[in-house]
Amino acid sequence: MTDKAAIDRILDSTPQLWKGRQFSQAQPTVPTGHARLDARLPGGGWPLGAVTELLCGNPGLGELSLLFPALAALGEQGQWVILIDPPWIPYPASLYAHGLCLERLMLARTHANSESLWACEQALSCSGGGAVLAWPQRVTFPQLRRLQLAAEAHAKLVWLFRPERALQEASPAALRLQLEAGDHRGTRVRVVKCRGKRTPEPAWVPRPFSVYANHLYQNREHALARHPLSAPAAEPVYPGSEQPEHAGRGGRYH
Image (tube, rainbow, N blue to C red; front, side, top):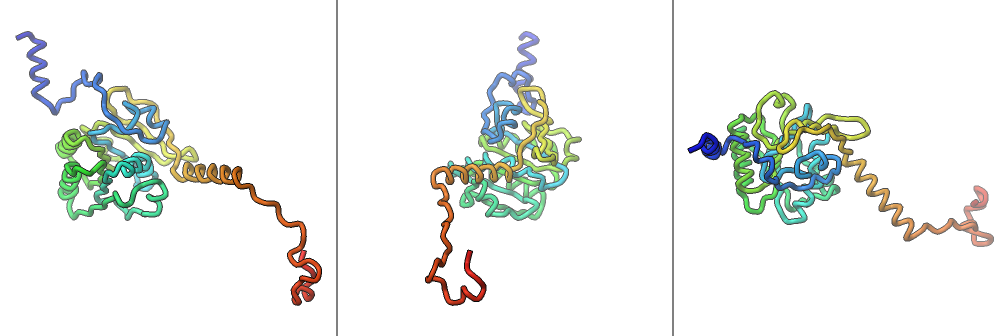
């Protein structure tokens, strides 16, 4: 046996070790719905069958809105979206306004971190599930690796929302994104780790409200073009003798 064959045998017997030659293997992806972000991610979207970590300092800076287009598409396909231990109660009206199917949305609450990770694995094994979103209190490298393998086995989308301090920890996740609150340009997304390419420059993703408001404005302009408003009447409302009796007390209507 040659030295190369011996090394290949060792590598093949260690599935936990990611190999550089896997660069050439296409990773199935799901479009994010944000052109600027798709252009920076390997395969042009969220990695399917892999764990994606979203790391931010404080929750509520638009991290969930990054997923709205992909989650809406899953709902249209009849797949379940499962949220595990979010730090807030989801607002159904907002989710519906951004295209999410509420009938295919499930919220799970657990009482311990171990239960949260167990719920993630159970959700991944669900045949009708399309995506799992989880906010674990803490997660170790072996636990992350276990979730990564479960995501690969069931070809599901997995997003873990973690605090920014987790940047200092090693992670087997296929994709790690750092999110920062930005200015009028939206949310700043920095690719910390990805497979198959060098980490690109950060992307600015517009806030969903701006996108939604622009959509409403375009619909308004389209509606006005099809049904223009009629000009206001030039004559007074009560001309001549048709004035009501009380009109004379305060003067004529103009």
